[in-house]
Length: 124
Image (cartoon, rainbow, N blue to C red; front, side):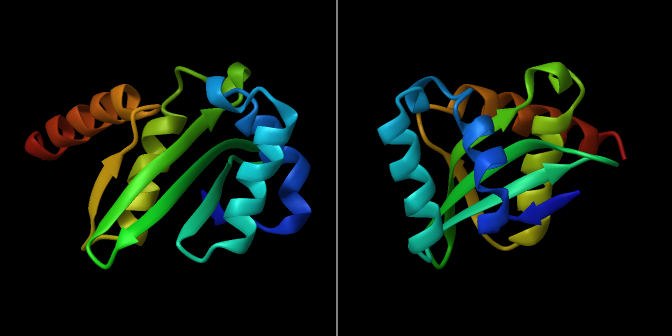
């Protein structure tokens, strides 16, 4: 289930963000969290399974028609289970009329998710 980030989830979000290669430095990580907390066009969402928060997806609302995915991170013990794809689908359902793109850090992963979702939709 996708949920909006709240300040109470800051430590969990920072932990998940730290799995992103560009977010290893603490100062960079703190600046990224601050950007999500203070800029309305930057939105952070968390993925919660039955008990725990296990994933994170961050987006930038580029304009009224476009969203750019900035961060996707899944707890290593929950990878290869479709969590990343589910988060992308969650964003797609929250913003159904927007064009979704990805930055260079997550483009390869997003492209795989997009291909899988399109194949699943063709099989329906």
